[in-house]
Length: 100
Image (cartoon, rainbow, N blue to C red; front, side, top):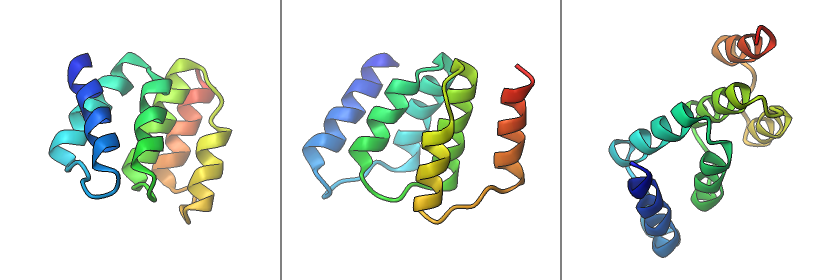
């Protein structure tokens, strides 16, 4: 699966805005990185996408940061910049981090 993540990063980079992964391609890679607690891997993909993200991707990023014990402030700041507010699911993710 690690190879698939690397190939996805390469494809996004080469596509340079002309090609975007579908959820069929993107979701398994994000699931893998989230499962590993790989904050850097998720952040790499987010930087390559360079477009407003979906709430689902932000929640994956938040869960990964919480699981890794990383700060979530950068995620929340970016969500706010992209017009996303904290909703019930976001709040649950944040509360999970407090109970760790």
